Image 1 (tube, one colour):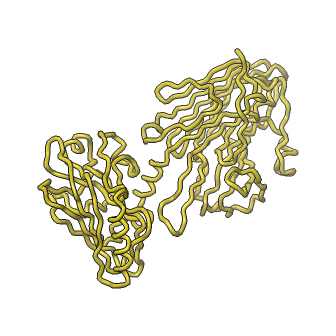
Image 2: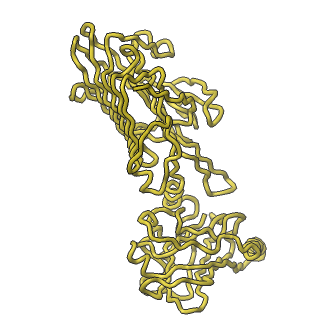
Image 3: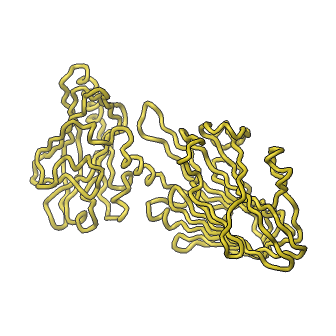
Length: 449
């Protein structure tokens, strides 16, 4: 079988994790600042099996090696490298901060432990990491840096014997998200992973007799995400699981495999549900509705639970919900208002009840200084009929319950701001559509940012 050339990816925006390499622990990074790899031509890699399961932000990694030692008995310091990102506001001295949630290594089926770790921190000048500078270990307060950590384990390779090594760990995929002080809505990027095969080139002839790679992306699909790109383009996909197998795999010619995937909707949903900024009923002083069904009052719009809803009877008249922002010491300024349309408790309830077909927004202010701001925003929205005030009413999908930025979410204000001082914001229901079994119309959640 012809060997497949894997493209070399050197972007530090990737989470890099990779094969183990034999190192000279005496003259290595502890004293010189660089790992010194050893050539072990008598120890061959008969097979390597790599399994990557993407869980969303994080991924579970398992790699299994079968080595064969043609030479003498030997004990080797095996260094397994993982690169990960130091996120903003992380404190490297915090004992509760766990970068790699789990790391385990076994030899011939018996669990063992790394002797120690070797770690260096890099700071990068740009998102692609093209100019990364190594930093001293004690500079653990750096923001936006990258850490390279080697887990070093002593392993005995017996003469004319197979040695099986298994490594398992979890790691977060890299992404460079941004949020600015003049807007509460973060700008999210795709998540990226890369597995580095190149350290294994120091065993045998730099090849594996057999290679197996499996990338399980079923979770990405289940949370509404998608695989953007897998490099190289050699994987066969079935049911969101990508596979590749081959023989005589050359680690020098095939240095890496990379995965880029988009879960921005899911991450934005988490951002909203975690209560960032003003998505919290404590910032809403009062809520009134034109009418509500028993146990389905307007406060349900702010409880962060899509299984509850504000519901009213579909009677032909314009219904509304009006809320007053808290004008206490910390006065929220609203940049963004959105709603989750329909009753998202489950498919039966969603289909049975009606949905909103068109919104409008207006404001009432008690203070002149705030009134101008509110009126300006309301007038702007009314003059712009394309302001996403007619929500989609999609066929039920199970992820509607958690996907705030999915198809049921409708922004009704996306720019400018409304000040809290004395402002009441009224959401007017202009039209509705009937449910399959009920005249009730429901909205599950409302988000203020």
